[in-house]
Amino acid sequence: MIKAFDEIVKCAKAKGPKILAVAVAQDVEVLTALNTAKDLGIAEAILVGDKDEILKAAGECGVELDKFTIIDEKDKAEACKKAVKLVSEGKAHIVMKGLVDTAIILKAILAEEAGLRTGNVLSHVAVFEVNGFDRLFIVTDAAMNIAPNLEQKKQIIENAVKVAHALENPEPKVAILAAVEKVNPKMQATVDADALVNMNKNGELKGCVLGGPFALDNAVSVEASKHKGINHPVAGYADILMVPQIEAGNMLYKSMVYFAKAQNAGIIVGAKIPIVLTSRADSDIAKLNSIAIGVLMADI
View 1 (cartoon, rainbow, N blue to C red):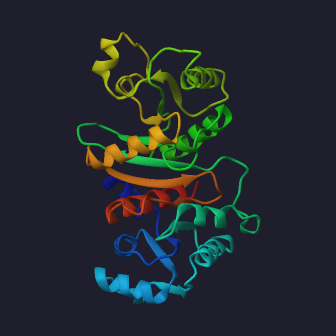
View 2 (view 1 turned 60 degrees about the vertical axis):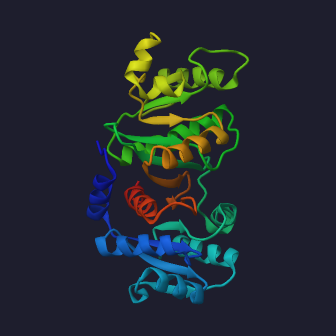
View 3 (view 1 turned 180 degrees about the vertical axis):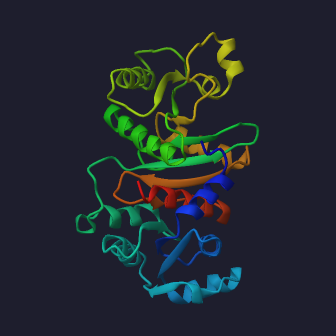
């Protein structure tokens, strides 16, 4: 089982390089990450965006652009469409978000003519390496699905499990998070957690072990779960943290980055191809980590 980002990068080097189509590539952190990925042999890149702005950004970070193909497109929506088309035509394996709103690139990816839909829910999967823990954490969904219903939650878990499998965790432990550990009819998150656990027990949700509802402390801390008398294989040992809705996920994501100083990566799963998608505020290291996971996901 992969337990750190340096191991992810090492595995990506073995499986790469893959070709990324980067939508609206005029971003210093994106170009820095792509340059490192290129030098490591993880990925090649086709940069789609405003060429003048790409040249300007490259000058700011010292990236030599002669190692990349550039497609000049100043309109951001059109740049997204062209990047997606490169994947649809088999000229690239992965789409990566640059300096553009998530909604714009997702519109291009979900367009019928792109042919990248699978019929499944698309969801954001974040991966964190947190100091003091012996494993990576997967958090979902912190960026896409606002208030998922039960069926959507099932598919969100399935997407996260695919990422865990790509990280060589054959049976990840999934904690369904809520504010309390007991089912309360007045708290939908706990009701859904109970239903999802039952789906796992009867074989509807495969490739993982589910537990919940759990408060966050009982999901990640053995001591906290013992203190509350919770005896479950997932309690204290969770690999995947399934949040009830986007606000909780977004706050957990940002708290890991800004309070815990955790290394992170972000990817969208559920389409026919991986979509590397991080916050525009994320560092070039986070973007490199995300590229590496995208490479591991490209063959799944």
